[in-house]
Length: 303
Image 1 (spheres, rainbow, N blue to C red):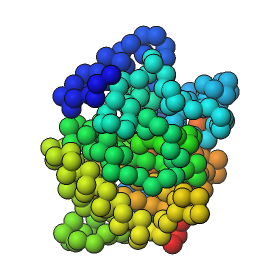
Image 2 (image 1 turned 120 degrees about the horizontal axis):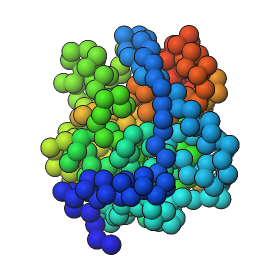
Image 3 (image 1 turned 30 degrees about the vertical axis):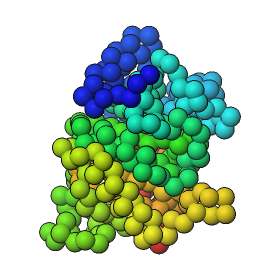
């Protein structure tokens, strides 16, 4: 296969999506949603009944869910090596393959998986940001990363992910819009006053319409500074502590994680972008009663 050209990536994604929907290889989440206000921020809480059904499925099928963890995990199952041909779009750059997420939170929800095996908690490299920036520069949307099981990753094989800009999808727009007025002009990372956990926000020259190579370099520079700020240093095994990263609309958010679940609800990067997914209707009410920010703080590091 040849590397996907920026101009035909989405054409290839749409074509593969249509085929996978028709064959039943793609299983979009069917959700009901509610809106929760907390700390001046708006969170969409989506109840996906299909997630509970997926948990009861055979281990291999269940392990193929790469974004909404919390169900059974088979450590010996790797859906990316090789990827399912029915879900494979093609290469992006020299190190990654575009794969349709089997259980997408929306259509055209993409996994950008390394072609060779690397642990998910090995530090992100320029090529990882190049793959992400190719999509961000051409189409906008949100790039995100679940660093390790405690951050919501259900696969060890290294991969970043991307969502298109769409109403109700996670994004950084709300956080950016509610920052203090001078935050975007500061050269150093800033903290959002509403977020009660350790995090860093960077204004980065990356996003739709910005050169992909320049975007990737800017994202890597912010990521490197964010790691230092949060104390995300590799251990003797070369792996980092668990963390989440979100990038889009000219911003990058990073935060350190302490655990995956809040009261049985799996929290991943999308939750910090304002969209929380739950498996049971009572969990939706739990988020409403406890507060979304309390849920996020409970799974994040305080320092």
